[in-house]
Each structure stands twice: as structure tokens, then as C-alpha cells.
Image 1 (cartoon, one colour):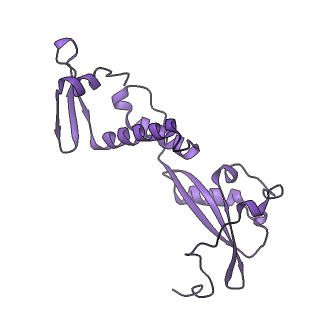
Image 2 (cartoon, one colour; image 1 turned 90 degrees about the horizontal axis):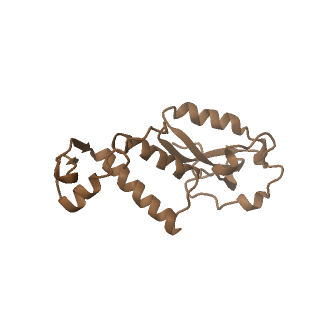
Length: 187
């Protein structure tokens, strides 16, 4: 906390703070002088807790710091900018999802990833979207195969993006919620 580095000592050692309605109000007591009040609201407390737990998990190696999680940390740092006093990183809230796509083509390479990326961005304009693509191959009215392509591959893939891939490496079991002959067309 560059802006208020003395606040940790004030809270931990001097216990000079108050809470009300999920907000903590802290006055620095450095040098025995009562400093200006710093308010930390519930959203900032949640961001701080999530960020600290995340960093611990990354350092100990139980979590992997990927692009989505880095964006999430950057967003949490922006949430805490009024407290740490550093310039914001301007990270929009990230959103990670799995996008299902039904295809009657056996080669997922025929899929226009740019159109999918644009469609996701259009549907979620307030978010920085990261998504995995789940291609469900359909024959007739049955889902017969499934492939899961991670964001690391999807984000920068261009035309003929599967030409050099071992598709078997991305094959996954057909998801239980995939529509098949029992459910397609009903509803």
C-alpha cells in the first residue's frame, strides 16, 4: 500500500479502526499522530482478500497464473487504487466462459473464430472476455463428438487454425448437457 503503508500496523498493532456496514475506517497512528481517515469499503475488502489468496496460491504452485487470472488480479488492483495510490491499470472486469458451438462439419478448422470472438465481445461489451470453445459435432440430430479448445489457442488462431493440430488431443467426452436426439428440437 504505497499511499498508506502505515495502515497495516495501525490495524494489526494499534487496533485503531472502526467498522460499519461492511466498511472499515482507519486512521494512521504513525508517530502517535492521528492521520486522515481512510475508508475501505466491502468491495475493496473483497478484492483485497481475493487478491491475497490468489497470490498465495500462485506462489505455492497450487494455482496457475494464466491470462484470465492475470486480468482478474489487474482488475482487483484497480479496485484497490484509491487505497494503494498507484495509477489504475484500466482493466475491465474479465469474464471466463465456455462457448458451445454445434457443427455439422467433422473438421473444426472450418469454424470462423474471428466471428465467434466478435460475437462474444458484442454480447458482453462491459467485460474483457476470455473463452474456451467447445465444438460439438452433430450428425443428423445427434451429438457424436466433442472438442474443447482452450483460450490460449482460440485467442490468436487464424484461418485453417486446426491444420497443424492433433485434434485427438482436444477431444473430450460429450458433455451431459449437450443436446442429442432425446432433446434436440424440444423445449
